[in-house]
Length: 319
Image 1 (spheres, rainbow, N blue to C red):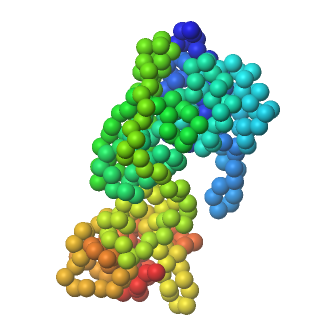
Image 2 (cartoon, one colour):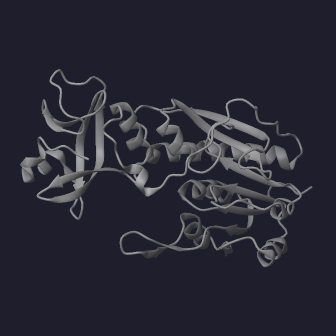
Image 3 (cartoon, rainbow, N blue to C red):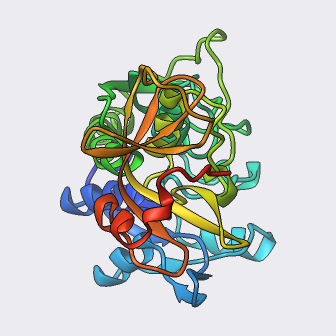
């Protein structure tokens, strides 16, 4: 049985959530012998090749980085050569085959950003916000062949405030995850903790988040639209279309708020109107209030500046 500080750890993760978990392991002097992360991919309008936050962090700390497209026989053999005592996974973005799960004697441990069995799968933070959940948390679990179905070591719950977005919730969950991971590892490597099976009730599965999920339907209620904004901020963001001068222009909403009650004067669904000192859009119930918007090909601006430049936006019906 290795001492905690001597245990050979392979870490697998990709986005900033995983980077925070990896940083906590490095700060606590864990012996990280290799880091696995997604391959570099083109991103953005200019399709520039982007490295993952985990890769950038690992290279800055001189940790070997491996970026396999898949776990074929050669990749698995390479992983065995690192002789990991344990593999720690956080938002890696790949399903590990059983041949990988079988490698480390202390198995594969996953840091998952939800209170399992709620929100199994990718994008648990976004899905909790989409659903309007008022509580979420982090689960440390032993991985098995299923999708986030393994037994649980520890969980920590966190409240979700009405103003939280995916961007603000992520660092809170990463901090909580790092804390209970360190506690779990110390006990697991000393064989002082055993995971318990997940409950069979309360299982929910994440929907995959794609760019077009940001499209707003004004026939939804304002609260549902606002939850979509919270879930998809900053990526992919929410948007609608404005038919102007024969063209259909895409307009993104970077900052919004809501009023749950509809105004006394009714408007058409999706219609833009003045409401006090700000600008609102009619929904099935309630009003979306605009704070900052961006017309396709233009810069993001406060709504007052936008209306000053496009006065015909008032009265428009967005699609």
